[in-house]
Image (cartoon, rainbow, N blue to C red; front, side, top):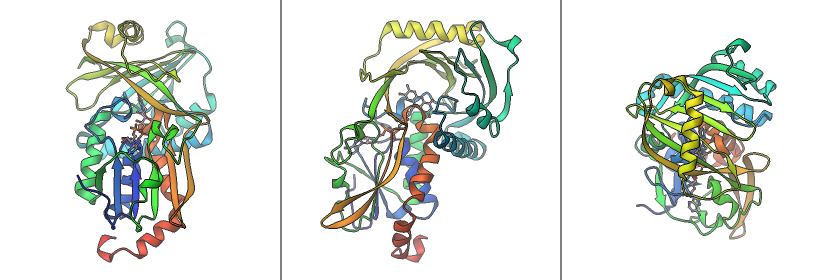
Length: 357
Ligand SMILES: Cc1cc2nc3c(=O)[nH]c(=O)nc-3n(C[C@H](O)[C@H](O)[C@H](O)COP(=O)(O)OP(=O)(O)OC[C@H]3O[C@@H](n4cnc5c(N)ncnc54)[C@H](O)[C@@H]3O)c2cc1C
């Protein structure tokens, strides 16, 4: 695989959904041939330190209630909607009917905001709610085949836009400025931002999830139940010949990559209770996985920073800490990471051959 070159004005560290979305936003604006994505893991790899392949994956009301999270979600829904409408098969993103249920603590303001853009949004009448449920909505969501979607982005970035991919584990964020021509580094290292020298953010922590992969082509509805101390979900996986992800767990500050049979039993019992489609026909068990969500106290960090390299001030943009929302909010986070370095992009644009723009 290639190494960093003198054309790499923009270096993105990390090839998870966050780094790939930053590369996509920049490529759509004509910077593809100026980008190198440097990462230890790429789409197709699996590791406990690489979260993206383990995502369920859907758009849901699971994210934070602050204005920033709401804005990123909306931008993410728009982006995934475009993919589902224009290149659904190729991108592994599908429109899917969805029902979300809350046992308590219904985030009303957030629901109000989401109702303004979610397709087919409806509040379910109380008489239709299962026992123990206080509030529920239905809408048309987007489901994503996470491991295939990141492979699609990788291919598209390389083939359509000429983005270069360099496999390397960096010893520090400063080492991403390997070439004097590097003007911006995007730090999209997910969970590693807690320990990577030059970042070492003490607010980062893992949130463990365990999921079960089943074969159940008859399951067509995405379902989520938000409890006080649990999350249960059923997510049909696009482009997988009828596979479905059943979950799950949200274990804060747990970094255990093992999977547990008792957790499989709990997931199967909870999802059977949640989904009529599961009760109608028992799914075939295919496997179980655990992944670590890159969580951060106070929410994700999308922020411009500066480092001094050989006496020169260089732009550094942090984009990490997406927790359980990297796929649904990632494109919105990428748009904002790019917007905060417009001045540097302008300099890069001025030094680019006209043919690249
Ligand atoms: C069970 C589960 C279910 C989930 N379901 C959903 C869902 O339904 N919807 C949703 O939106 N999200 C979901 N998520 C969350 C989502 O998966 C994450 O938010 C997202 O994957 C985070 O992406 P990332 O790019 O920040 O990190 P990662 O995917 O971990 O990527 C980090 C990248 O940085 C690289 N890196 C790190 N350190 C270095 C270094 N020193 N040198 C070079 N490279 C380095 C890694 O190799 C990797 O390429 C789920 C997660 C889990 C675990």
